[in-house]
Amino acid sequence: METIRDKSFTDIYSHILGEIERGSVDRKHGFHLFNFSTYDEDSGYPDSRIVVLRKLVKNSFTLRFHTDFRSRKVKHLEKNFKSFLLFYNQKSKLQIRIKCDSYLSSDEKTKKDTWDKSQEISRRCYYVPKAPSSDIEKPIFNDDLNVEDENLGYKVFSIVDANVVQLDVLELNYSGHVRVRMDVKDGNLVSSKWIMP
Ligand SMILES: Cc1cc2nc3c(=O)[nH]c(=O)nc-3n(C[C@H](O)[C@H](O)[C@H](O)COP(=O)(O)O)c2cc1C
Image (cartoon, rainbow, N blue to C red):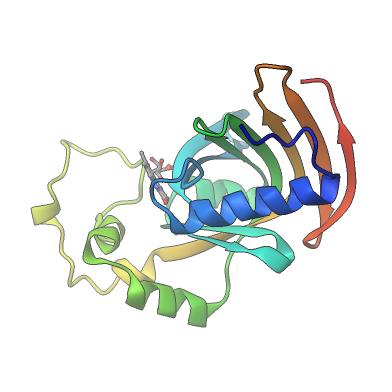
């Protein structure tokens, strides 16, 4: 099995970027879904959920996902942009923990282009009549959604850009686990060190 043990730090960094990029384009890749955590100031607890990795912008090391503007994660980010991403690829036995500064994208053109290209099934998520996490009487059916409602759909569709600040990479290995911590600034690797797995 290929291991990061014998690679240079810059090669490990490129490898990680490559794997994350693959995750953004390949639905079957272990990094296509990830765990996104925010801080919920109201409860004082962290909050996590699974989201789909939509894009990696390599030069700024920004990971992108789509969400509903009304969701709790967006409310959390408005109060505190500090967030945490967690990936695990069972095939390559690679865990990546990522400290990120995450923001709602204000790039209307990208948002419009992305929406126009998105499939009907993905768009449906943005037509639920109440904000995600709202109390409801009973579970909804897609057939009940009003996909003509002009206050929903594109109006609540939003893009979150997570800018990487620090990586913690752990590769499980029969001969000994390998772990490295990397600090990143504006898409550049600024320092790396081996740490105890
Ligand atoms: C496989 C899977 C993929 C998901 N992808 C997304 C996603 O890309 N964006 C999103 O906002 N929620 C996604 N969700 C739903 C979230 O996990 C979460 O339930 C929802 O966004 C509400 O989260 P919040 O109330 O904490 O903001 C996904 C859930 C699953 C199980």
